[in-house]
Length: 111
Length: 118
Image 1 (cartoon, rainbow over the protein chains, first blue to last red):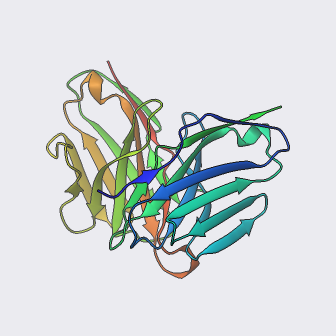
Image 2 (cartoon, rainbow over the protein chains, first blue to last red):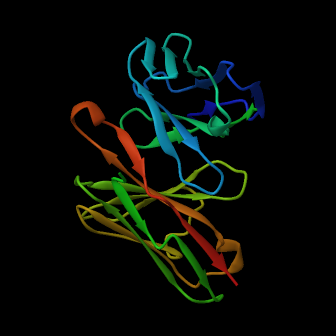
Image 3 (cartoon, chains in turn orange, brown):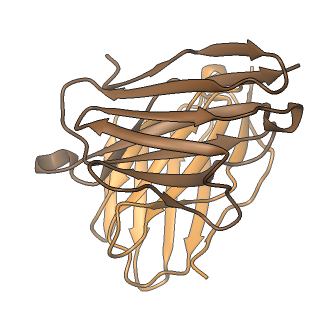
């Protein structure tokens, strides 16, 4: 069974610090990886997507992918209280458009 | 702005009634859409894949006769919760993958529908 694993948290970081969120996946055929942010009571919104090994930066966010280790991470620099949310890692299942979601990591940024 | 529109955002109904939820892709065609359900403090659970022009594909354990899906056009999918009961109360979210170009494989989510069955 294809799986995506995340630490449920909560992960607490002080304002201004770097938050590091991690995700592992089991489907070696997966080629597309996504991070979504979900505020309580709202639907997920896309933060980052990454298809190639290495780092991809967008503003305060950096996604890192290591396909050999089947590992994806999200770094949030200069964390703000408004970043407090649940972060969902999603992996596109090989051969379909379906995503496999992790259970999410709850991030708390302390002012 | 939103690329996937979902309506209604909130619905309260009596037990035994049916509720229809609409999901529209706004500026792209979606031959496939997805329907998820999310209970409080839990992750998204894929219910079914909606396929334009053919039957929906349901995930294991999801009753296809209870959750009717119709993909009427390349931009519209509907989910009907038939004979709703209190245990169907949940947050229902649709998504549509945008294919092609830099947006390939990205699923865009609707705002969600909170269903409360009394």
